[in-house]
Image (cartoon, rainbow, N blue to C red):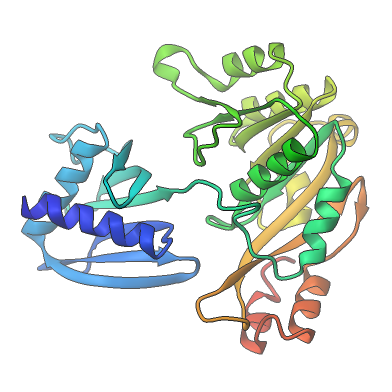
Length: 324
């Protein structure tokens, strides 16, 4: 019961502080550390013994439907916990280090909040993005982990839904944000639910907006391109360190320049920055190219946020070189 209580306490606290991740990592030969990630901060919870950490990881693996007897291989799982006072969905990944000490990362999965679930460094960027979205074409979102890319896509889709009744379908691995207004599919290759098979079914459903969680490889790149080229409005994310690198990344995945030119309607890079407006408050800053026109650059947006005292000088300096 002690381990279960500890696990539920950690989940409850993570939800309360809106943490993105929970880490259970060894820090020396005798103990582990429990910590949360909140945007760019690592918040230490406490240190525990190796024995307690092993039991805690074992319990989380049980919750996530993972093989509790296997600790050498990489494992992933997911679970939903519902209590009277709180509830949460999360996904898990475990792997052992070279000393065979198992580690765990738990990613909290949240629903969208209110109209957007986002705070903006420059609200006019959000208005511009909403106002420029057309009924077809591919919009690609990039940025570091936990930059709000999925939330941005969902918020745009909800805006379009509220503006005009539309059918919105998502294909994700896994579903990160639950929304009862969307038709959501989750990849499960064990039963044949691949990105390819789901995309064919989804296109037959004639979605007004198709959200593909992430372009991970050549297959998913071709899927989003094909959907956009056949006249659909498509949102997806891709790993790239800047807006300019999105194009290079797609070419690396086998997309031709003609396909890129004919299908891509928007390139969006984003990061979450600490704000000066309130304690522990963060906002999203965008770098936008919409309808083949660069409407903002990262450096110019950063300078505007600094000059209007939305961000501090140290934040301005820290993020000045992140998007070159």
